[in-house]
Image (cartoon, rainbow, N blue to C red):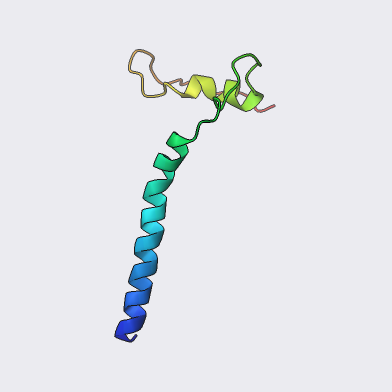
Length: 70
């Protein structure tokens, strides 16, 4: 590759990385409401994920029981 092409590729990669790093800050500054409306019940996907949020907890051991498939 020529040197000018390398500069173009490097500039594109830097611009992409800068946009990716700036995106969370941009989203945090938006003045929108909460993502989840607390007045409505949780969707089934959110209630299903609930038990798996604390999977790293040490007070409950691993579950060795096998469950039949439905």
